[in-house]
Amino acid sequence: MAALAALSKVCSRLAKPSLRTCCHVPTRNLNLLEYQSKKLLEESGVAIQNFRILEGKKDADVLKDFNVSEYVVKAQILAGGRGKGHFDNGFKGGVHITKDRSEVIPLVEKMVGHKLITKQTPKAGILVKKVMVADSINIVRETYLSIVMDREHNGPVLIASPDGGMDIEAVAEETPDRIKTIPIDITAGISRQQAVEVAQFLDFKGPLVERAADEIEKLYGLFTKVDAVQIEINPLAETDDGRVISVDAKLNFDDNAQFRQRDIFAMEVHEDTDPKEIEASKYNLNYIAMEGNIGCLVNGAGLAMATMDIIKLNGGSPANFLDVGGNVKEDQVLKAFQILTSDANVKAILVNVFGGIVNCATIANGIVNASKTMNLQVPLIVRLEGTNVHAAKKILQQSGLKIESAQDLDEAAKKAVGSI
Image 1 (cartoon, rainbow, N blue to C red):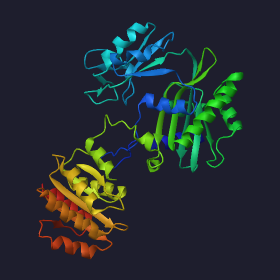
Image 2: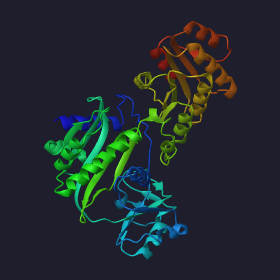
Image 3: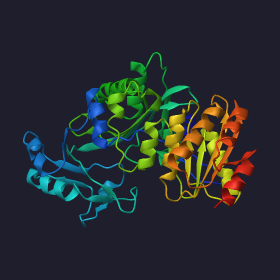
């Protein structure tokens, strides 16, 4: 059951955390398209299918030296279920296979510039800008391999199963004995013995054991090199010509390592991300849009969740999750207000700040400057507590602005709900 527990922790960190009575706040992860992940694997020597990227018939020349027996043509969007999807132009399927190279460009043309709709996309679909054309390999057997950072083991954990190409959560639930979990010493890295042990567990035989072990070591090398928190290969496949290939890859990265991984983070795809969320991230603000009408500005994720819960309990509905963090400056407060008010649904703003690291006076000055700069028209309710709170309240009182103060969070929530 250790494997199941480890896998469960991984899934819980990747899923949307519950906000109890209120709503769900998704975690923000760097999003890469399939071909981008494959490039990172290739750069680390991991065996992958040969592929080319096209944006239309203008790129036909890239196929001149790409001679394979069968081509896989795959639309590149951040969503699963592409093969069973359909396009807004009526074309069926975001994944096609053909032996005839002359058919590749017409397939690409039917995908690029059109929206692909799958079970994992918005109803309107996602616009396809690039198509990957890859060598179609003959897979004999599929296995599963992932490396994740795991809190229980305080470091990386390798999770493997000989049952690849399927829902790994279902495997963990129905046949937990088919999953192997191996903690990796972060200082020593993965040993050859561990890599071979995993390869054997994955049912590779003969010379394929060593080849699979090589791939496992290379994947772990990539994991540490790029500051990944997850590398999932599903499937890690055995081919009919005796190769071990990473066919499909999912990579997630440590946001705290962005300063070391600038080239990778520069590759991020924002195709399904709210523009306000993107703008907030530029100013080190955490923003997630909701469906309500009360904008929330807080410091700290826990305080944000509590604020939204209490708004809900008082009969209101939060319009967003906006956390300014612990080192907020006045210019960030202004940007936070601009982002909040750019949502036409926001009819009131509730500021709830507990000053520990944050200086309440900094927040107060930011509120006053933002209100004057923007000529704020919606009701503003402010609850401040903690470091330099008395000076902060004085700043608000002397501003001459129409700002409703509250002594505690419950009062603040009631005033915000009542102001609409």
